[in-house]
Amino acid sequence: MNDTTTTSPTASEEPAAGPGFTVPSRPDGWPDLLGRRPLTSTERADLRRALEDVEPEPAGTGPDPLFLAYLTIDGLDRESDPRKAMRLRGRILAAARSAAEQRRTRFDATPASVTIGIYGPDAGARITVLRVALAGLVGKHDLTVRDGPW
Image 1 (spheres, rainbow, N blue to C red):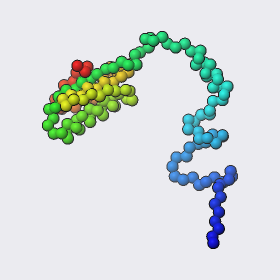
Image 2: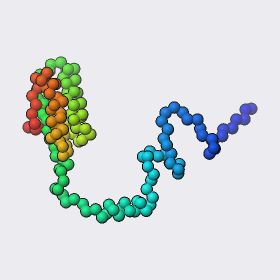
Image 3: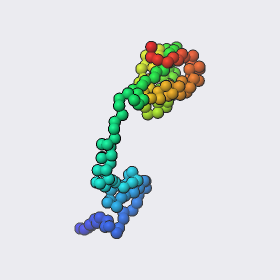
Image 4: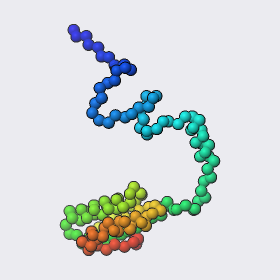
């Protein structure tokens, strides 16, 4: 009989590093994912006190986070080839996602049009970026663009 025993590495022995990314560790043994030390209990208490002392802003003084700007693209039903129509809608959606940059969006589609809404205090500027990004596509496919969902 073969009697094989497995031993775990001790503190002085480190296992062989395999391929890939190695996460640095803190002195307490936990991984250092954020690149900083954890807060002590006194620092945490000081932070809580400082946050409690801050006066909240009265409602309506800051920019409206629910501001919504729209862009509607009409004339999508002129494309007779379904593959080309799907590709065109995909390009419009990709441009909308790029212009929105992780902001909340609204995307309403009908067979003839697509309406894109972008939320946020800078929604108007983002719609302008989207309009510029779609300018070549709109001209090539003879589409009409208007502000607003109506």
